[in-house]
Image (cartoon, rainbow over all chains, first blue to last red; front, top):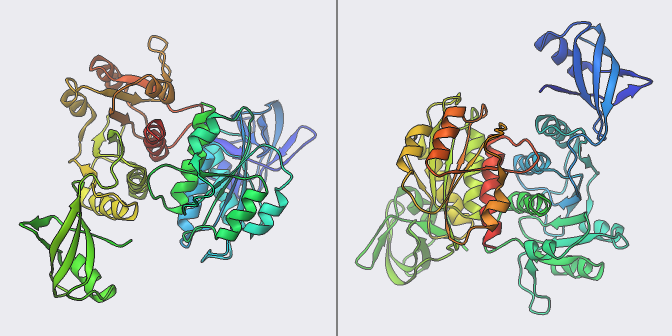
Length: 240
Length: 240
């Protein structure tokens, strides 16, 4: 099934941007009268019929639509520190999107080596992964903020708030993410994953004060991006 | 913690190969008398003291050893069809290794586009991922065989044998991998993951006759390498 992506759907008319139009007309050789399926990135799939087949801007008439198409039964917000190597962060984003998540906050920790991230590339990867895995909603990508800012912004949030870190803290024993998820009856989850050098003790302390529950991801020492994918998989399995 | 890898450990003496010796002496600047930790790839960690610090061949004396160092409480054999793009297969191998698995059989299906795989590169990645995730055992990589050969070779094997495919078969309803794993009391697992074009109906039929249980990996449509990582995560979580 071939999906297109458009943010320009209104009054029963859908327009594809330059890239999507080129792919539709030049590569897939669609013409006026053909039916195409378009996701809006916000959860709705539109079945449309092409009425203008310019390779610069395809215009299509909406036939019908399906809300919450390919939706998953939970809401997962992942706050992940960018990895030194960008590819690894992008790989996590793609894989977590295939399984299903909703919002990505790149967060910069005190021990982060990479302190900037261009969100445009990640957004493109998420659109592509959403189409590939047949979901009409594309995860939202927020601009990077610091770990402390993220914690402050989520102090009053409801739902299950988790922070995965590696260092041992005798005062605060960690349970496995599986155990904590198993004991949760809701569907709203926030997970924080630290950088290669882990969260600082101060960041972890602030998170705990803000209601985040410390978890571990099992006995293996996982890279940042593997930890993030493993956390996404934990949520995916919980609601499977 | 810095780990070295050697297959040449006997009579209390450990020798590092050319690459590992160069890394040990030139990069990390170890010298005679220094203590190093060496994994043998078969599950044992050796604490050793360097007695010859040539950058071409480090020789070290074994001080003591720990068996089953970093071992996981299950045995997972993954039979995965190589992806069109080699990087994606290598990503899966690295990530599954970080979580923990034991044996990799690249298998070629009737619908496989990629019909060859060089195992040497994958072996290198697995050694590196084992060191990175602090495990003394490196997964074994078998030479590629066809899906049908793999099924035939595993017909008489005990343990839980799973095959993940995407097509619907009304005669054989699939359960989720989570449900099937939850109902299993043993520790030996074999999982087969098909190529981009899925297993053929004949391959799936043969697998079922050989005692493989058909499973799905949840509601999402996953790429081959994501399916393989998700299956590895399912085992990792079962025994977490």
